[in-house]
Image (cartoon, rainbow, N blue to C red):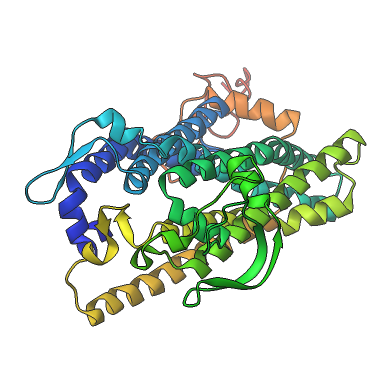
Length: 414
């Protein structure tokens, strides 16, 4: 809704391109997710296992399709392509193939989807670790922890590689963003250092109290320790992003990424030793890393969005020229309302999820599994709040109902 309220000028200028991409997301993903989400969330004991699994897959596919279109639109704003500008200053599509698959889109899609998988794995792993710390014999918690850490082992190194490739693409198309990420105010003709920590000073154009590795930044970004790297001094000052935010959010994201890699490596070692479900140090590490995926994702998006400032459409449309002509009190009022509503909804949801996490997971017994399979093939009664089989699993269809229905009447009773 912000497109039409707070960013009406942007909607007018970029609407011919961004609007259809958002519409494609609704038509191909939103209805798919909405149709199966209820079955996935509330159908575990109401539909067959096969149908529930199929509904879960459809929600996952719909979510991926949704990410595809939304990230395509965002990537076009970062690296615009396949358009022309008409006489009234609107971006007009010329090639939808170039618009959708713009230069940064494949890298951003891979990096974001992997981040989502890692975030999920870390949460599931943390829940499994919590219950293993309480009862290491819980079979369901063992399965949760094994699957989650297995995904972290595989996805974390791939994510670091995808992030490196995304960074090289950003250096090519948005060099000022990389300069801010690296904290390079000055150019380095003989190899740039990798600044691990420091305090960026935007006004002075330097990073104070820095701890750096000589020439490591050139080695990472150019694969040559002596390769030259330009600094923000080569960019007009009015086109600089706000370096302190980009600098620190990038380091938070990268630092957490390497902690995820360490968790995956630790889990692999313990798995090979046969101690995956008994290592309390591993379980505590996994528990502490539970929220890290969310933090890393937020830090990554802060890096991406603040780093492309001061533009909404990079190099073509400034953020200051994209906003709606609204008075500050109107914006402040709506923002305050959103904060209150989001706090209530997010707080309630968080408490509910924590309550679910606290409950020990249960593994279905063979008898329960057979009962589920039997009930799966029984007709469901139409009346009632909770769907249930119209015929008891142990009674043949067509038999008598009510007290004594399990036995045939004797001759004396007749």
